[in-house]
Image (cartoon, rainbow, N blue to C red; front, side, top):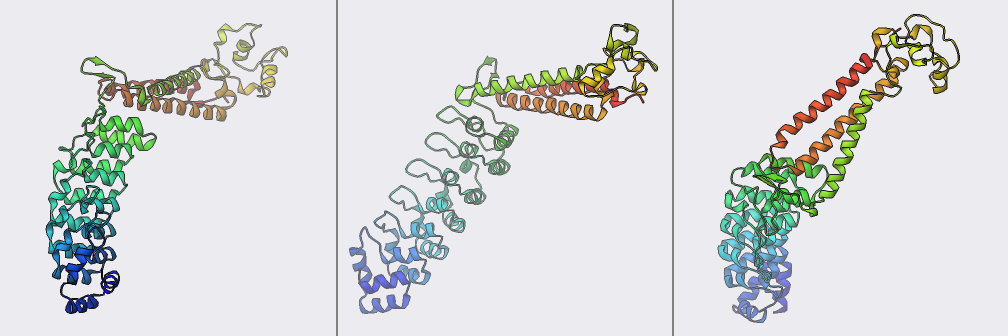
Length: 416
């Protein structure tokens, strides 16, 4: 390429280009012959975003639009990747079908703009030829998948808003993944909700890929924590199911070991043990409960302590000595309970504040253990009638434990 033309292209000097064309009207033809497989003046102008320079070249030699450089890219590819909206407009104005040209990697300019997150360029390209949004790469990858893989989520939202077509959001790659498979794997709950809101009825929430997984399967397999729970809820609300439910349609199936079913089982066992311990503590609190004074005997310290009225404890083997040994101190006569408090927690009488804290912690342990069980069961029994009755069962069990604890403590009332 002529050195002066090269410098003009890099600097975007339109005046120099015009002067060179006056001197030699065939200078661009010569540049085309010399730049086969290299950077043409139009490539350089598009790369650096020189709108006026590009416009002048297009007026003189529009054929340069389809030329590929040494990297296999057209001028429109370069302008789209860099986000030069003005250059994109000029090229599309000169040749609207330039947006169909593929580079060496089998991508059209729209794909390149999506990967780079050039939202304004995407709008220009889609408005020029909206059908390009449906074109896959040579590797069989849709443009929405490319946005998700490259974390260009604003570009994805923009494309969905521009291409208002249900078939567009259901495009699948070579492994039969739709966009929900990819978003589930990347914890993109907000985008999942966005797509479900835009195309709730048409979006295939139960599409199965070549590995036999639905989007919900992908979420259960690859994602963890609160983000996964939010994604699961959004998908299940939209009717999503796993490809292999534990119970479904008369068949009994276990989740694949790849999903960490052994870990889920371990968590379930731990949660059940926690509930059992907490429930027993609610029914039989530390220190036991007050006994019926009618069963009192002179040799039974607990029974003697239950006798109503003011009494004199006969010897050091009886309750005063016992309570001193445990750190509660001596029981004054006016704190002795009467027969109406039989079955009440001793701890709630001796130290009401401490019993309150114990009861709160015990109830929280029950509630959170129930929640863990519910989450694990939601993960396993996605397509099962058990999910409908499980919350009722767990709630009933929690109420029973808390009511039992309440009556054992008599609402924390002590005799004074």
